[in-house]
Length: 61
Image (cartoon, rainbow, N blue to C red; front, side):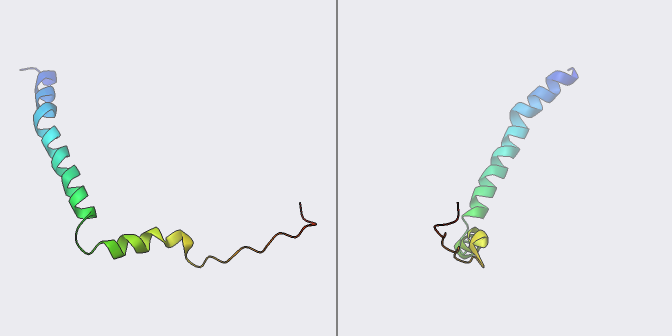
C-alpha cells in the first residue's frame, strides 16, 4: 500500500470519526448544565463599565 492510499484511508475513517467526536464534545461542553451564568457574564464583558455618551450639542458637527 502506498503512502497516499494509507493516508486517504486514515483520513476517510479515523480522522473523520475523531473530528466528529471532538465536535460533539465541544457542543456538549458549551451547553453543559450550569454554564449559562458563565456565558452570560462573558457576553456582557464589552458592556461593563460603559458610561452613557454625552448628548451632542447643536453647535457641534
